[in-house]
Structure formats: C-alpha cells, structure tokens
Image (cartoon, rainbow, N blue to C red; front, top):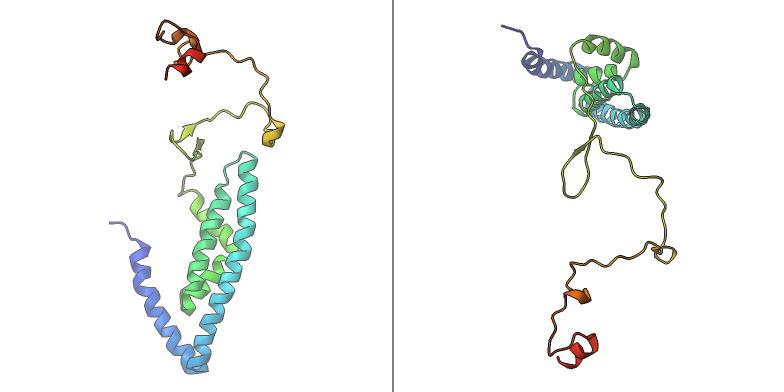
Length: 187
C-alpha cells in the first residue's frame, strides 16, 4: 500500500496551525496575531500578482518561440499554490507559501517533479463558431489587409450561376412572353 501525503497533510496542517495560533497569540496578543494574518494575505496577493505577470510573459515568449514551456508551467503551478497558501489563514501555510515564492526552492521542487510529470504538447487550434477544433490549421493566405468599406471594391469578373432561379434562361414563360417588363405588368 502506497503512502499518500495529502490525507496526512490534511490532518497535520490544521493541528499545526492551531498550535501556531495559540503560541503566537499567547506571545503577542489576539489582535496583533489577526493583523499579522491579514498582512501576510495582502503580501501574498501582491507577490502572486507580481510574479504571476512575469511568469505569463515568459510562458508567452516560450510558446511564441515554438517551445513547450514545461518549466514555466510548473513554476506557474507552484506560484499559484503559494498564493493559495498565503491567502489561507495560518502561519504554517504562510510559511510554506512564502517558501514557494523563493526561486531556489522552486528549482529544487522542479528537479523533484521533473521525472514524475509528463508535459504533452498539442497542436489543436480552437476556434469560435461551428466546426469544432481543427488540428494543424493552415496559416492564412498572405498578409491581412484591414480596409474600410469604401476602400474595398471587387474587380473579379462576375459569372452568373446557371442554376439560379433569377437567371433569365430558367424563367418560365408566362402569357407567351419572357420579358421582365411584361412580368411586372402581369402581376
């Protein structure tokens, strides 16, 4: 039977948080303890925003260069977990959250996780509208030119559709004539 850390952490961390609240609250008082929890949540939010934006820029640069941003995605997941830990009230979770914001700690976590996770690249293009996802969508035909309506005109020769009911050859002859002017008079 394999030992899982998640159920163990769900039992141990709340007990450690209660013990930390009692110890710190006994030393500095109730209001300063609660103030410290609020301040760490605010600092955690600021750190999450600051490092998260930089991380999104790195992920965009990696994908634009055609590389899979595996390391950056793992960093992003760890920063997200760090932010959640800092927003969770408690000193143990705050300590773990602040540790995950340290790049050297994330490097060690990446080395530990690298052999245990698989990053799979997909070339699926999702489009809005009908048709669903397309694989390996071809690029557009040439550059996109944005024109106003008055700047656009179509110079291609118009070919009539022989199957169109508006085509004169497909009109039924009424009253012995097929002229459009006679059609209007007979209505």
